[in-house]
Amino acid sequence: MMSADMRLVIAALAGIGLAVVMIVRGRLHPFIGLLCGAFTVGLLAGLPLPDVAKAVQKGVGDIIGGTGLVVALGLSLGAMLHLSGAAASLAKAALRMTGVQAAPWATLGIAIVVGLPLFFETGLVLLLPIVVAAAEEMTGKDGAERDTAKLRLIMPALAGLGVVHALVPPHPGPLLAVEALGASLGKTMLYGIAIAIPTAIISGPLLAKFTTPGVRLEAPVLHDHALSIAPPARLLSLLIVLLPVLMIATGELGQMIPGMKGTAWLVAASNPVVALLLTNLIALPLLFGRRLRDAAIQNAVWHETMGAAGAILLAIGAGGALKQVLVTAGLSDLLARTVLMYSISPLLLGWLVAVGIRLAAGSATVATITAVGIMPGVVASSGVSPELVVLAIGAGSVFFSHVNDPGFWLVKSYVGTSTADTFRTWSMLETAISVVGLALVMALSYVV
Image (tube, rainbow, N blue to C red; front, top):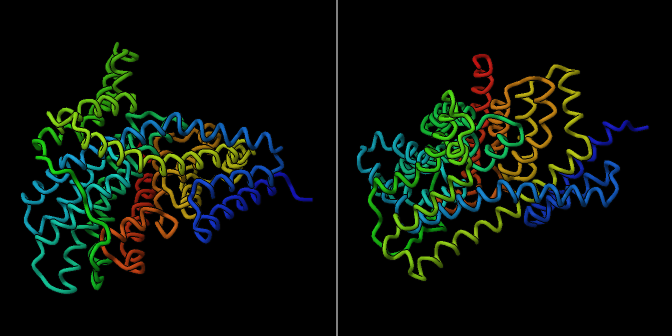
């Protein structure tokens, strides 16, 4: 007779497999595929249908009520930076200050800074057309050499966006992992930045030397669209980009001062929802000035925000449903027992679980949500640093972007690579971020 643990593993694999087939072969939205996968896991694991439905509702509600606010506020801030021309102004100014030789490092730095407060897809849509245009201006070669030179600028920008999305709060994935595992937000940000910088260097400018030669580019399918308004001053633009990160860091670090822990204004400043909401309110007048009340501007900002938010919130909500059903069925307890029985590194286990969900569901945020949901028992029983588990899961969540990842098609459309060359460049870049990130997390575990 099949053991309960084996039945649970088979149920989890079957549910995730069904979600993959529905998303990849059926071309259905991840929202539907992941919900069907969640119900399949619960029923095959032996849970009554009403209990499965309750777990699904709880999972969706928990994610939308917490991380959903951060996603929506980050998207609206990204729309403002995009439509006002603030991000474009910053990127072009930085690229003008560097020569051709230093330009790949400039695009890497720009992507890390601009990408800090933005959801990955928002940062991609906002920044990539600017980098592509700058690359066309700065590379005077023809044919294959010109395409290679352009990619040497584009790939570091993608690496910068990818590493902060995976490893640095207040991005939704790492932020949710911090909350779910009881990690310190300040320590996670500090460790994440320390790991993100060398990871971005290796997976961006250095890796591009090996993956870009011989790649031919077509005309990009997608183009940038912004309002016809004068961009704000660059210092103001930089302030808006950095403000939410500075607020959260101030709140976290300030509470480390003796006698300041729990101070109301520091607690509020360190809350990502408060930080992003205040940044949104400050950004509107600073970025748009007297034209703030123009109907065209308001419609453009909120139309761009809501269009992106709908698809992202539905996908991560369904990911939360799958996570909750796995937890309710007992997978978290099973993993905790496995770690204790076989002495598996909790960091490696978290990474492997996130990799599996990433390959199955496509979304890095969904992979993080699912992995952290079943890891609290492992963290509690092993005594491992929860901050490092957050980062290991974040690294695993970006492993090998492929056809079920919306980011794969966005990159292909904006860069102009063929499907095969998108695998060769973008998919390899994401895999490098994942593997190098895990290696650095494991190395850091011997120090902290």
